[in-house]
Amino acid sequence: MYRLLVTGDLMVGEKTERERNRVKEPVKKLITSLHVDAVLGNLEVPLTDRGFPADKMIYWRSPPSTAKDLKEMGFSMLSLATNHTLDYGVDGLFDTIAVLDREKIKRAGAGKNLTEAFKPIKINKNGQKLAIFSVTSTLPGYSAAGQGRPGAAPIRIRTMYEFDTKRLQERPGFPPYIHTEAMAEDVQRVSREIKEIKKQGYNVLVAIHWGDPYQKMLAGYQRPLAELLIESGCDFILGHHPHTFHTIELLNNVPVLYSVGNFIRTRRLDKISKKLFPGRDKETWQMTFQALVAVALFQKNKISEVEIYPILIQDGIPALATCDAAKRILHEVESLSGQNLSWRIRDGVGFIKLN
Image (cartoon, rainbow, N blue to C red; front, side):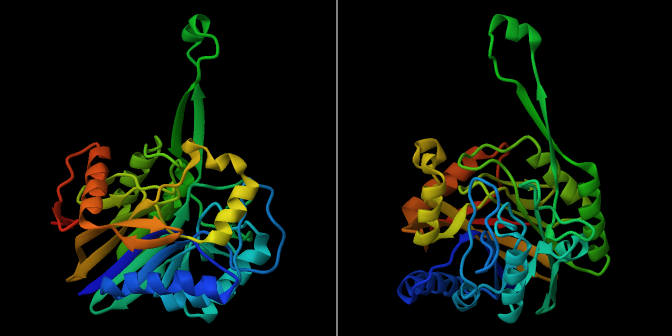
């Protein structure tokens, strides 16, 4: 048996010892309470003191010492493919990789070239084999890795605008219809990687940074992309980026957590965001304080069950939701789904049994 805890976005990294401990201790306590063998989080910030900020709306970085804090909290693996991967350029990315390697935190999703960015984390423990890929569809123009170019593992999205000319005549200024789809060459690349690792007997988890933030509707490309990943052999899809939870679906008996929301958001990074983007305080741009974490249970080298734990984030720090609050969150997750989610809710925890 092997229990893997997966969390959402880690906007983490304080400079004073007092603030670091304020975050570190309760997170460590939460992780310990779930009795897991490993923890996967999504690192939203480069860990560097070098580089220059990218020309984008929000750019973050945290001290390299943050890697040690994450290790002490219990994080053993991190996905790196996000829209913040190159917030402080190539220097920031290389510093992040170096300090994670030094702390022996496994990583996936970014590297010195496309091959390294797509290299999965491999786990072979307790008779269970798991490969974890990290990819992103949220790509500022400079951040996708290429052959000989550092960056994040990309699944690029094509956006198309459809104008209804008759309606525009009757309603000038009527907005266009928006259609999105994953680019075939990127899907084919990750599909090849998944199929190759499946030949070696690994289960496959894809951590994907995707979707539209600050609301709970799926983008048009997400479900079709999830289906393509599952057709390739993916066994579990973990989504993040929207900074709120989205729905959960079972597609061909594969759990798809479209977004689990945030996990940590420290005071220092929150202040940076408010300074760079004052409009973020408007109601439509609020990050929710409700989120999810999940524990995937592996038995006989396959995922047998997924446990869904609602959390509440107060002053940037996560805690398990009380039973009543957890039930409300789980029922909302259920209501967002386009299908009848087959799960059992007990004591504020959702249990998804897989065939």
